Image (cartoon, rainbow, N blue to C red; front, side):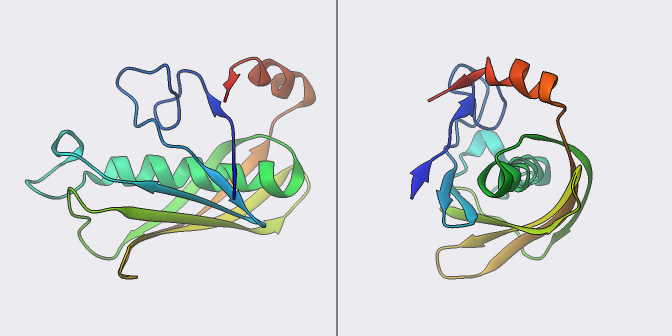
Length: 145
């Protein structure tokens, strides 16, 4: 697997964001993968990961399918998310995402969050618009390893 660059101050992947999750995303063939072990500071109800944290990670990982498959960056247009099981604090969560439709200036992607034993926690599907070449060049200035 190949590590994908992050964006310096991004809440999900930014290594320079003191409040961020600091997640590294990996290219695995045409899929994007990541792992995250949530801490008590990430909970909503006691012992359960806040749904907004899961949403943010699924949003980020789906957008990265365009980088892996088309070499372009995107902005989120819409996301449909289904929470299947409670995500526990302190357990490793594995995220995967796939590009499912290339519509030219728009892509559709899907993503899943599982526990190590395969339990499906959350799944999402979204649509993302490809950045203009000018905006992509600007965003590339925010990348970090």
